[in-house]
Length: 276
Image 1: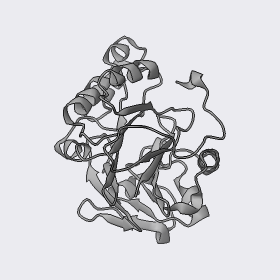
Image 2 (image 1 turned 135 degrees about the vertical axis):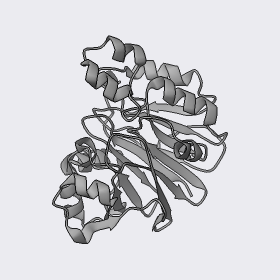
Image 3 (image 1 turned 90 degrees about the horizontal axis):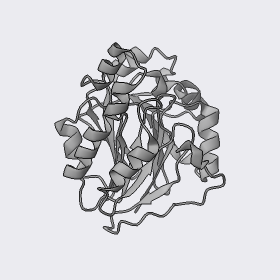
Image 4 (image 1 turned 90 degrees about the vertical axis):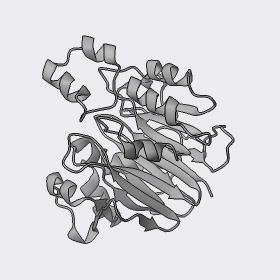
């Protein structure tokens, strides 16, 4: 069985990632509005009826601002750690809340979701590995440093959403104040292009077919720069840069070692090239 994956939006203005098979799917984070989530999924030919749960990585607004409406409208369980729930301060229906734990994988149909702690300036932040049969997809964004857990799970992925937030030179020369630059690169902020590339080149498994570079900074990065940087080391892996303005294609990921990318469904509306 294969997994279909897509970024519905990726960046400081909102994050939402889709992973699913033919019968069930999940969303990781709900940082865009319910209406926009529905519109983008419809354009991709994806059905909200397949979505069985939402997994929340941490409490920052670009990951939760659409959560309450989405969970309420579709009566979806929300898997969230106690610390994240406390710091979200959202009026979630307690009946929809499920406790997220690093010790117990969540089983949803044929999907298995494992959470693990990540380094970020949030109270109790997590990354996720979603598996179906022998196919593994990682969602690894909002990361200050590469830790042992990230390295372990990345090495198992057939596909991954991986943060490449900023270019070091652009950040140094950019307009951000000194304290914000230090927050971004200080070990609990975001992952630079260079550190993401180092993880990719050193630990990408032979069976990896797709890498979706995610959570790019609007001011301190350039999608074309990131694409060219990673493409030069792709070794057959399909490199995709997620947009902060729209959805990606839907990509089908299987356990086959063939590294050939094909959209899982045709797009009804193409994202403008200028967004990248």
